[in-house]
Each structure stands twice: as C-alpha cells, then as structure tokens.
Image 1: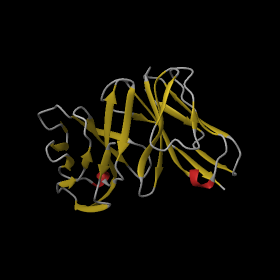
Image 2: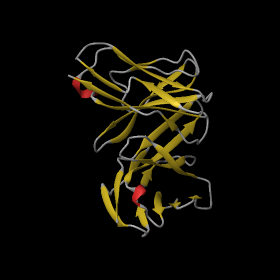
Image 3: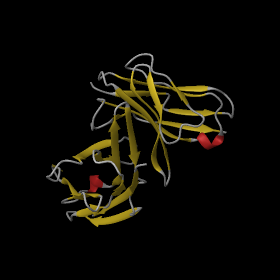
Image 4: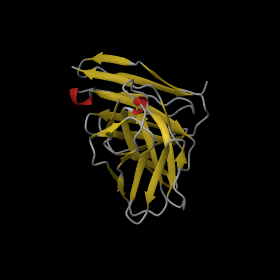
Length: 116
Length: 113
C-alpha cells in the first residue's frame, strides 16, 4: 500500500524568504507520480507541480520546485520568495497506476503561514 | 470554461436520509474520483472510476456508493448517512491511465445530524 507522510502540521515563513515543505512516501512500486496541491482558505484545490518517478530532473514551475530524492523517497516542495498569497494548506499526493487500477493517496497536509 | 461542478455545495441532513451529491466535468476526462477531507487526515479517496461503467474502491468506501453511467457524471450516493460522514467532499477528474493532474470541484460540505 502507498503512504504519504507530511510531518509538518504547520509552518511559518517570512515574506520573501524561501521555505521547504517536507513530503516522504512509501511504495514498493517503481512507477508513480508525485503531486503538490495548494488549498487556500477559500477551499479550492489548486495543482502546483508534478514529478514522475522516472524523471531525472527536479520539476520546477515558476517559484515552485520539487526536490525529488528517489532513494530517500522524498519529494519536498520548495517555494522561493514567499508571498502573502502563499498562506494556505499544502498537500503532497501520489498516484499509482497499474492496468485498470489507478489510486491516489494524499498526505495530511502542511499549513503554511507567510508573515509580513 | 473547463471545470468540475458539484451540487449541492452545502447540505445539512439527518441520519438515515438518503442523499446524492452530483459531480460533472466538461473536459471529457476518463478518470473521476471522490475524496473526503477531514481535519488532520488530509484527503482520502472514497471511490474512483477509470471510465464509464468502471468503478473501484478507494481507501474509505464504506457507507458510499457511486455510479458512472455517462463519462461526464460521477454521483456520490449515501444511502443511509451517519454523523461520521460529516465532512468536506471533493470530486475530481483527470485524463486516465497515467500521471495527470486532477481538476477538483469546489467541494460539498455535508453535515449529518
């Protein structure tokens, strides 16, 4: 079974500083996808970034980058130059696909608060 | 506009009264899924569907039913709701058969008294 662990229930970061949100995963499969989603206080789920298990380069999307360390089974999200609008819940998720089977597992989330 | 819609957005009901939460997407996505979000537990997958007439259990399927008769619709049915099903529910869709981002609906906040 797949499992995602986010060990930081809450974090603070100063505006304009960088912050790393931790995500570790547990799977015996070789092929999987890792995602990060943002959930602002308004409640919607927003896709941020994706990393495939076979991708050799770390994914980047604007101010977001994913620090992927396959051997350590970690997929940490790095947000550079934090902005007040980055205050939100952040969820790490994994997709496993095999034949007619496609399951998604989410972590418990990290609440990020950006301080002016 | 590409979107996933859910109805109702808010629902208060009583124990045992059958209810259906509708979900519809206009992106011709094969994959659709239901999640519940509870404080401290993140999102947990209830059921998913790989395509029309193909559904499977997620991690927390007890007390829920789904059907996929049309590609665009994936309703969630609670035949006899109980207070422990009070939660925030999300429907999501994506392209199927691979590692694709999911598009989420706005959520349905359900309270069962």
